[in-house]
Structures are given as structure tokens and as C-alpha cells.
Image (cartoon, rainbow, N blue to C red; front, side):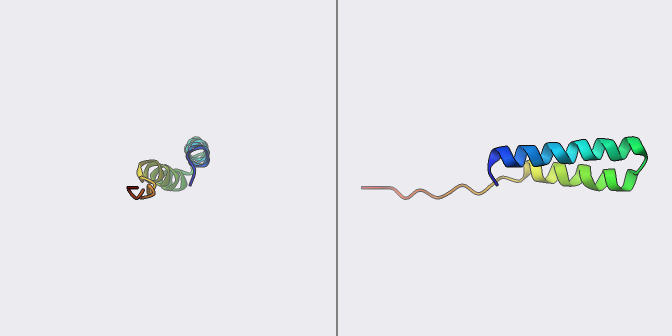
Length: 53
């Protein structure tokens, strides 16, 4: 996932989690916050560059 798309998605999850927490839906907000934390800490795979001689 490109960095901009990933950042927008994580930001959306955080806003959704805050909104769920404020509205009293604690189970959903916990799940949303946990998924945002997991997605923000997962390192995206880097392409392996072959050495050129």
C-alpha cells in the first residue's frame, strides 16, 4: 500500500475510533483502534534490488 494511501486509511480509522468512543460504542472503537495500531506498525515489504556489476 503506498504511504499516502496507508496514512489516509489509518487516519480514517483513528477518526472512526474516536467517533465510536464518543458515541458510546466501546467494542467497535476498541477494534478500530487496535486495527489502526496494527496497520501503522506493519512494515511494508521493500523490493530487493540486485547488485549490478
